[in-house]
Image (cartoon, rainbow, N blue to C red; front, side, top):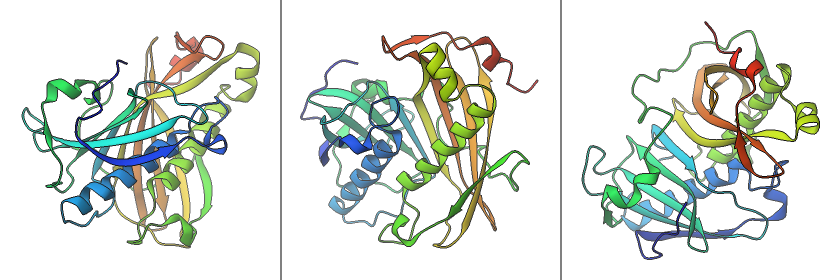
Length: 274
């Protein structure tokens, strides 16, 4: 991913990667990308004189390069000023001028305080492997029998408006993926013996409704697409009242020694339902 001009959009967040925020792949955990985009959007909303009402109906995130311990982080926010997604908020997360991740918010409230930008300058943020927007993404009514219990939500997991934080939702999504893939032979033992592990390249987060502190959460996961290059897992999170959120995650297999992509294992391809 090439460097990007430091003056595009509006700077909405500055942070850094802490050692404790890095996962077993030794890079910044996806939950903290989600936290950064949520915090940047709250700043963008305040700049425009509107209230940030939580995550938009559908947020697409693409991951372009890894971040490691002590990396400085900057998020710049802008609005597409032309094309089929005109008016959509785009956020670009970079470190020392190199793009690490990007997000597009579909269906959210306008952010009038943000500068416009041509889609051509941020075409790397457009969805690739996942469908744009949240159309057709209806909440499931009940979890499958292959589910994971995620405990009760805590008051500290909610924002200042009483909404479950994106990073807390994504923390649970990571647990679901881990249990699902481990159950099918692609857990820690697989990584130890092969030197391979999965990494996200794209994600779509769809919020259906809110929950409250003290709600017990349950979730499931299923592989919905796989080919030699990547695979997609759909996760659904529920409380006792129904589905809170759905997350589609497009992942690739990576050699942890070279940090390069490798073909998806044949046994994983066979998990896709007929």
